[in-house]
Amino acid sequence: MKQAAEVVVIGGGHAGVEAACASARIGVPTVLVTMSRDDLGKMSCNPAIGGIGKGHLVREIDALGGVMSHAADYAGIQFRLLNRSKGPAVQGPRAQSDRVRYADFVQSHVANQANLIVVEGEVIDLQIEAGRATGVCLGDGSIVSAEAIVLTAGTFLRGIVHIGDKNYSGGRFNDSASTRLAKRLAELKLPQGRLKTGTPPRLLGTTIDWDALEKQPGDEDPVFLSSTTSTLQCRQVDCGLTETNSKTHDIIQRNLSRSAMYGGQIGGKGPRYCPSIEDKIVRFADKASHQIFLEPEGLTSNIVYPNGISTSLPQDVQADYVRSIRGLEKAVVTQPGYAIEYDYFDPRSLNAYLELPEISGLYFAGQINGTTGYEEAAAQGLVAGANAALKVSQGTTLSFERQQSYIGVMIDDLTIRGVQEPYRMFTSRAEFRLYLRADNADQRLTAIGREAGLVGDAQWEAFQTKMTRLSRARAEMQDLKVSSRELADTGAILNPDGPNRSVFEALGLRGVTMEGLETLAPSFSKFDLATQRQLYNEALYAPYMERQAKDLAALQRDDGISIPNDLSFMDIEGLSNELKEKLSKARPANISQAGRVEGMTPAALTLLLAKVRGQE
Ligand code: FAD
Image (cartoon, rainbow, N blue to C red; front, top):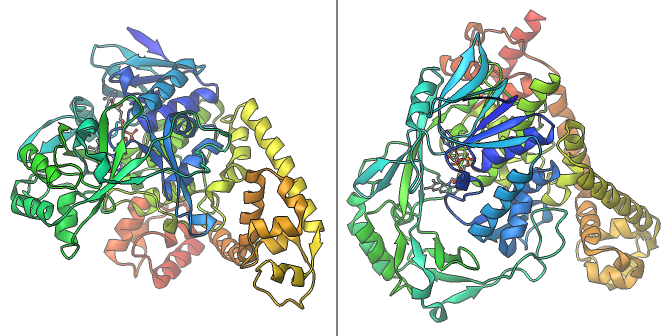
């Protein structure tokens, strides 16, 4: 059988779904090939979306018309704004999800997406002719021809599942690995490596002694993942809290040599920020206990996800250490924890559109680029899918800058610095994080998404209505003045004999609370809560924006100095061989990107600048 599309996406994980939907939203006929329809919306590990840095990415996906934020709100059984006690810039919305509802939402969204067809099957070969991607071949012999391919095979490429000293080929628990495609990809001779990640055992909820545990409820005023969601969509649940103890640590310590991670069976590097319980016990040997969040996997599910004890120990040891934990003395393990090792490709081979410059129309997105996490995968999928569609339909591109979005930060980090371990997003990765907030993602990106064809009419109209409401409220609060004495009386820290200030300015003062302002300026309280919060965040960071504007100007100046495509970094005298190689791999497009290549020094940058100027 032969099918034709303009864009074909391989893999229906979080990257693949966003890639396929983005391409289809732009209006380009798209085929999504995945091993099974049930893959769509499947969460391989923890049943949760968002968090610090990750929640920012989801809000950006949302601003660009993506799927993940809506699925997370639909399936959200507990919402928490992480870092609530810190500044709004580093607060990240998180939703614990009902796994079944999450997948249902994604599957019905994909089924109803115009211009998108799902084909079940395994892609075993890529068709590449004269340096251009032209289609894919499936295991059953059928072919899907296309002008662009987006590859999002996740942890499946030569995946090996490890449980203690047992291991077998698999893409994740109960799923086959993608071995034939991995072999074909190896023929492309791209720089590649092996990474690993792990997941905890799952527990039967009815065998947990919930009464012995502390409860963790969600927030009373939930902050959603989509800026367009206003109400809860299902019943909310509490999580349980427990912790490991010296007995747990003894069991693990005694069996370390039987762990796949410590027994030497796995070569790939794992996520430093999501360590296994074996890792925690070895690396933080002085800690007497480690916290565990017991997260119900859904409203109709009896399965509980014990967040914090991912492992690759043998099954009998897992059962033993689980039962040493308070509240889990009689817990039944329904699925063992395991580690998975898989192929990834050095993302420095990709350009800012996630395309391989050597093979026109071939894009890579998600875990295969060395990242970890649903959110990181989805954001890359959206960028790759949109670019594939724009290339084949209009010959244009869509790129994201570091100063504009976390998506831009991630893609720049991946394609310029590469990865030494699975990459996850943190707010500390962004230089302009006071501006890149979750609450203003739509203001930063929705117009860009609309221009690219990613944002539909309903979202666009809702955004414009919101912006009109916000700018009226801002203008009103800038015009309304209050005296410094009145402000000091409500707790603001300022000289009471100082000048009058606008209510907008007052919002940014230390000690001022929204409640205090409502008494002083009752008209403030007529605005809806979202508008009040937004004004507060804007006012709080307004004084810092000027300083950031200077840094931004310096960055833009360096962005403006392009490095010619054909410049040979190997020929720059005075650079170390290591740096020459790193620059050749990353191929920075301008001086600002070159400055971010790992190991770059001011002296090396001067040599590079001289070379660039010499070629002008
Ligand atoms: P995946 O979600 O893996 O999806 C890949 C898709 O491609 C699948 O649908 C598969 O069927 C399809 N596919 C593959 N090959 C082919 C082919 N040849 N033809 C057709 N279809 C194909 N993330 C965290 O943030 N923290 C964690 O602690 C964590 N632990 C994890 C533990 C395990 C055991 C696993 C498996 C994953 C873990 N993750 C974790 C990672 C998280 O699941 C991934 O980051 C995320 O799912 C990646 O999304 P993706 O779309 O790139 O790939």
